[in-house]
Amino acid sequence: MPSLNVTFTPEELEGVRAAAAAEGKSLKTYLHDLGVREQQRRQFVAGAVEWADRLRAEFGQAFPDENAPSERTSGADAA
Image 1 (cartoon, rainbow, N blue to C red):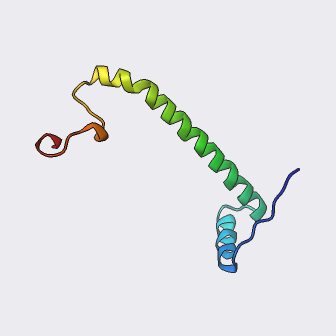
Image 2 (image 1 turned 135 degrees about the vertical axis):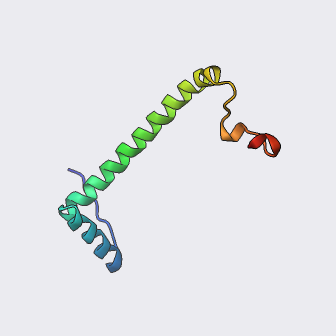
Image 3 (image 1 turned 90 degrees about the vertical axis):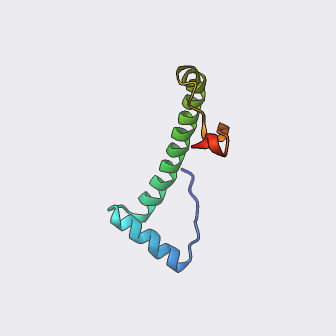
């Protein structure tokens, strides 16, 4: 199974060990799970963006008076 060595300063390692202990995990398990969680988070965000992009046109038709913040005008109309 592939593995890697990660270098930490003493202060960083102390913080990572404390975080692992707080979750009741070994350092190895904690760092593994951290990488897996980040990968899952990225997949979730990509899926959410894709879902929002698909529904954006439908939302615009259902609520024509609601504009995205990037499409709003500044000044008197922005309130």
